[in-house]
Image (tube, rainbow, N blue to C red):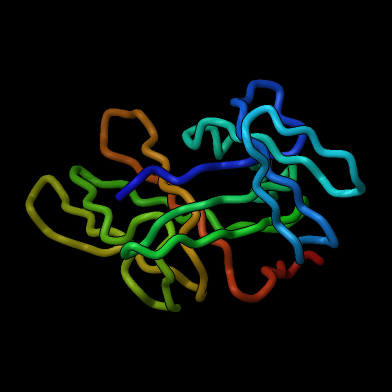
Length: 161
């Protein structure tokens, strides 16, 4: 699977590729290298995909972003507005085997990772909501540790609100 491309609004470190978002995400236009844009839309710049979690603060997207990825030979584009809440699912164990990859659609109760203990017992990390897996982050630690970032189909609400 190819590594997805991540485009972020107002990125400090970026590459030459740009995307313009017009009419609140209804029109998406990819610009050629060196092409300038004069208009009312937002310009998003390509950044390194591994920096995805730098634009997430307390489970909320801090800048508009667009992800272009390929799943099963089909290109998919996901536009995420600033303020969108993502679900973070941790998976920690002696050995962790991710079952889903970025761009995969998951349903409530589906397994996202298999967790093996030191004794050899296998458990699973499940998703509590329907959504799309946007990013997998491997957290460096003594035990294997992953975080799955999921864009839920329905907005997440907390009891405090």
